[in-house]
Image (cartoon, rainbow, N blue to C red; front, side, top):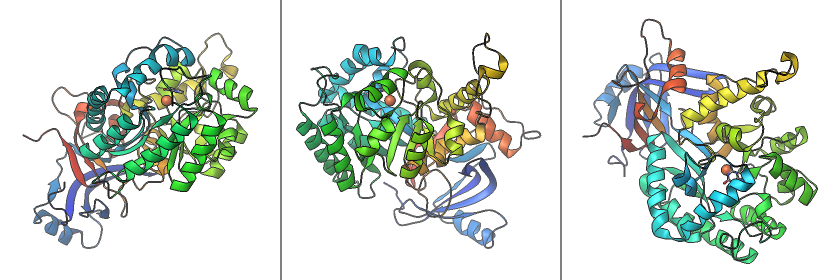
Amino acid sequence: MNDQATMPNWIHGTLMHAPRLETVEVVENALIEVGGDGEIRSVMAPASPDYDARLRQAAASGAFVNLSNDQYLLPGFVDLHIHAPQWPQMGKALDLPLHEWLLEYTFPLEASYRDVAFAERAYRTLVEALLANGTTTAVYFATVHLEASLLLAQICLEKGQRGLVGKVVMDDPEQCPDYYRDASTDDALRDTERFVEAVRALPGNTAATVRPVVTPRFIPSCTDAALEGLGAIAHDNDCHIQTHVSESDWEHGFVIERTGRTDTDALDRFGLLTRHSVLAHSNFITDTDMGTIARAGAGIAHCPLSNIYFANAAFPLRAALDKGLHVGLGTDISGGASPSVLDTCRHAIASSRALEDGTDPAAPADTRGRPGSRVGFNTAFWLATAGGGEALDLKVGKFEPGYRFDAIMIEANRPDSNLVTWADTDTGDDVLQKIVNNAVRQDIRKVWVEGRLVVDKDAS
Ligand code: GUN
Ligand code: FE
């Protein structure tokens, strides 16, 4: 825990954040004060009244981090969609469409988490890797298993990652294999309730840095009774909810055939569309769906790389943002083959450009794409930080008083790094653009969550 649990901590140096969509701010010589409870107390620029006195106080405090000219303080990244049990599969098994991929590779792998020792090995290395990549808030699907899912929550807490964790519900015997599903609808609901209680009661979880998430895998894997029951549990316990929505042609069509409605409409009727819902993918949502999602205030996890492999289409990101929907980014490990939210920023930018121009050179230019679809580095960075925080309704993702101090320090110009800056020609925005495009795990040197230093790669 923080050695100065009751002392304020101070950080001085260049900060970069995107407090609002399309607005990046780079502040040199910023001075941030963090309370012993992990909350940002103040953010001062040199022009602020009292700045000089506060800087002297900070430097004398013994709890002062002074960044060098090559070091930059950014909000930690928010990954809205991760399948924790698929970590051993990341980077392979990308050759089948979604439904076949689930049956052939993914359900057999996830079934092995009935073995808690296997789960422990995978989940520990995953949480460590994600923190090292700068992911300070992680939204996880675990598996159907209560014990292993609880272990993932415990590991987040122990390693200091802000974690939103769900025990997955899949109870429909028509769709889920015998070897991998909840024993019954009642079991699924009972285990979900137990999971919610147990996560909230974890020793040390007093600040709720780890939270339970009600997690119907997706409508095809759940019975109507389970979906209805989960809606009630989420409501009664005031929980986050996560699921997959209108991801691929197959999945989107399957739900319409079974329910006569789109995923969004069906989820809404089951009480599963709230301000605290995270809808993964959502590629095929209609204009009406967008209106329903906006009214509910639900968030979308945009998973651009996974969409290339499994979705049959690109998510209309620009349209969703223009409609005021809450959107953030998801790696979708292992549908997405990278644990890095920075990579995901690049994929979001590239995917938006591909949607804008279209991709088939045989199609006429004026019908090939969807004009006005592109997003730039500033939007991608916002999605990765403040956008993700907003989607979750958590005070993370920017440097403002009242927000939690979840942050990373990136260092440019280290030997062997691709992050190279030019002091004479790069503006602050240029450096941020280079970070979004070129920084990798090794350039992230320190990571803080809730004011606490949880990764320090330069510690001797
Ligand atoms: N839909 C249901 N389960 C999954 C999953 O594990 N990954 C993806 N990408 N989509 C899903
Ligand atoms: Fe997924």
